Length: 397
Image 1 (cartoon, rainbow, N blue to C red):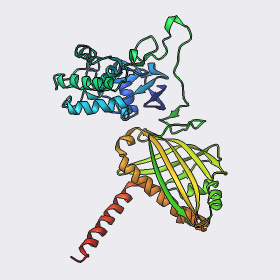
Image 2 (tube, one colour):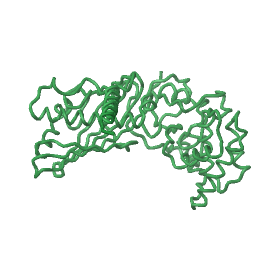
Image 3 (spheres, rainbow, N blue to C red):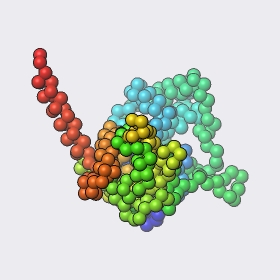
Image 4 (cartoon, helix red, strand yellow):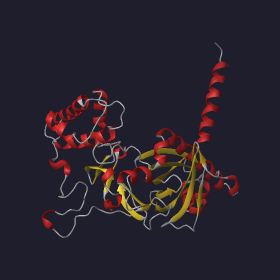
């Protein structure tokens, strides 16, 4: 088994895999990114096409170990990509998909054509897509979809990128084949890698750009200075967070622990570490963390930014929270945004209640539940709907 470290969908991962493991099997079986499809497994059909250092490449005939340090983008990593969003709309409009099996690889290749081609030349588009086979559509809708996106973008004065942004010679996705025979390879920027398989966080907690940000607010009947002092009690704050437990004595530089979450039938325990930043002058702070769940092979990065505002002539505090996160692996596929938002709201509500009890002198046994559960959210929604139903029944006609 080899430890393979690379960047997948803008997140650093390090996973054990056999040297013979293909990149397609690596992203599907190790990272649960099953949007990459396997067809012929001979590099012919193109269903497994991903971006390797920004270049379309066949992941079924590429060894994962050969991609050490490379940047991999699967179809899941293109959810917010501008060109891919336009292509998806065009594929729908032009009826460019039927069974959809070839579509992820087709979109990756089509995106490259949209970036590179100066105009919507049908012949060049057909040649460019000749490595992606479709058994359903006859390609007419696919070609029209790609043409329409190219025409629209050129009409908006978005110029083509020579080589699709390729600046390095060498095979697709090599990432460090230097031009002119330079002996010093051009390597991509490396990050601190999070171990996605063993739950151990890196020595340095890296910064990141959240994929999703949620804003929350609650109030406490205590002065801002008292609340800010409470936020400096890391162990006390951890005791107020549902599902959170510490696994080592905490410090601002490093807090090691775990959080238990249940999404329907799936239970996860994210083990990792965080760092704490505070700004006394602005009564604000930031907590940045990273963790992995061994069972589902899911990984997450998150940050909580908080700001304390005085209300009621300074006798109470409004706590403004900004919760940002990025999630990969199986839970990223079942953790829909609406469910995650509801979980975040429940977490903040329970945290506020627990914090109020803690500051009033309640015992630890009266605080957070053992884990944060999506089932409790469902039951709350059902209770609220039943209450509204009977409330309407009781209203005079």
